Amino acid sequence: MKNILKKKIPHIIIPILLALLSIFVLSKHASSVSFHQDSLKVLQEKQTTVLELSAASASASAAITLIPGDTAEPIADKLADLSSHFLLVLSAIFLEKYLLTITGTVTFSILIPAACLLYILYTLFHWKAIALLALKITVFGLLIFALIPASIHLSNLIEDTYQNSIDTTLKSAKETTDEIKNNVNGEKDDDGLFSGILASVTNGVSNFFSSITNKIETLINNFIEALAVMLVTCCAIPVLVLLSFVWLAKVILSVDIPFDYNKTHRRLKDNLRIKKHKDPHQS
Image 1 (cartoon, helix red, strand yellow):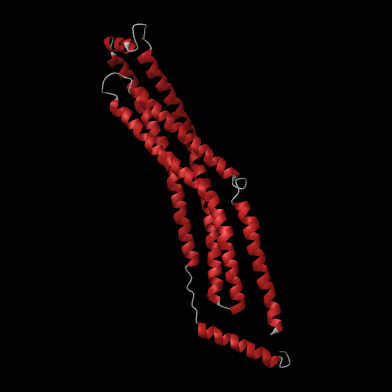
Image 2 (cartoon, rainbow, N blue to C red):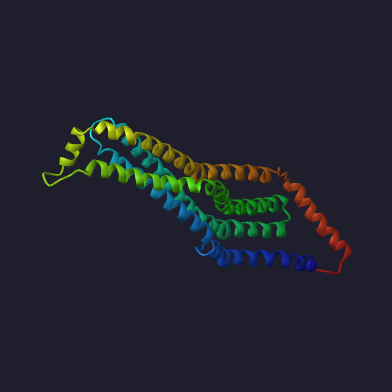
């Protein structure tokens, strides 16, 4: 009996040490900003890009409303709607930031110690179901910990390809906005604030609007393309990675756990009986 206990002691002490290491060392390290510095830097760059696109879209919308007449209002409304969609992308980026550190805490402060505790119970009682459950919890914790970094890495592969297009969109939006403002307000004089606009109307605003229409249409198309890229990289890919990890976890964790308590109890008693038969003088 004593020999059995001696053999079990390492299988009890080691999980305890691993649980303490996970809680007091790995958890703090995995949830720290320095550990996720590269991922947070990428997310911060995405956040800056989204804010710039949203601001450029709103600025272009405001500039288009300066054009006299109601013809440009639908275009301005379309650009204003794009700003609300960029807000959705921005919310997804903030969610990724929070999950990046939260998953580390959940994995190494809760799941891994729980798995170690279950393994200790398995060592004491030889319940195979508990050992399988400990393995499943460990695999699940590691999967959710790797979820956000994996999605960030995949999204970068797409975003790097379209980064030049996004930069071109921002530059084009600024140039178009400045051109509209300069043409509408360029003929102001000392007679009043709206004298420049009135002069533009009398000298043929329709010609100016016709010349700027193509640029505005191209600008809208560029904004839509940039929005599509940001939606894919910041929303669609994280969801696809999550679904892939859920599927992977389901494949790994969907192992049938046949467990018969009576059979396990009888096996434990048989092992003890055999041990006593071999060493009858050992208490």
